[in-house]
Structure formats: structure tokens, C-alpha cells
Length: 128
Image 1 (cartoon, rainbow, N blue to C red):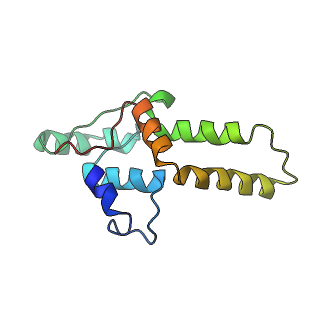
Image 2: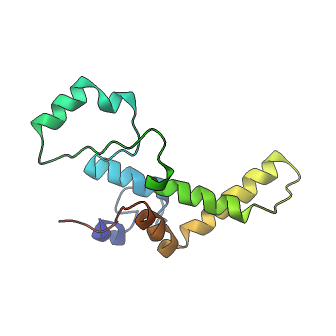
């Protein structure tokens, strides 16, 4: 995964060179078939049969229904909420702009984003 990220998001067919958590999650899902939620469709009999037919290619890890400590996005949300703690926006649109600005700031802090994954017990390193 690390080499994939170093190749850049353009190499992953995204329109810009910027990695975002949403893009990283999309790559993980597309490349490894990992989902971080318990959507009913993922627990269906068809999916279970598929996983049984391909035990070495896929591993399913189902998280509890609410598991913020296992979700790196929760750390991002907490960071943005903290940054906006004393904000006094004049309108809902201004609040949206301020929140988007804080999320964009996170995009430029890869060590912080890696720490959020580590907090969730996840690694962005390739395992082979």
C-alpha cells in the first residue's frame, strides 16, 4: 500500500495529485476489498459464499455497529470539531466553509493522517 500511495493519486486514476482519506479508503476498498462498516449487503449469503470460495484472496473483518476507535475518519472529524470549537460563523454556509478549510488542512498533514490510521490499529504499509 505504501508504494501505491507513493506513486500518487494520479496513478490511481484520480484527477489531482492530492490524497484524501476518502480516496485512500476508496483505494483500500478497490484493491483489498475492505469495508469499515456492517452494511447488510456485506453480510449476505452471496457475499459469504464468495468469501468461502476465495479464502486466501479475501478476509472479512466486521466491526461493531458503532466503533469510532476503529475508524480513522472519526479522528479526522474530532480534529475538525476541535479546530471549530470557538468558531462563530455568521451563517450555515460560513460554517461549511470553515469545516471544509479544516479538512483541507488535514490533507496536507500526512503524518497526522497516518497517526489516525495507527490509532485505529491500521497500517498503510504493504504486506506483500
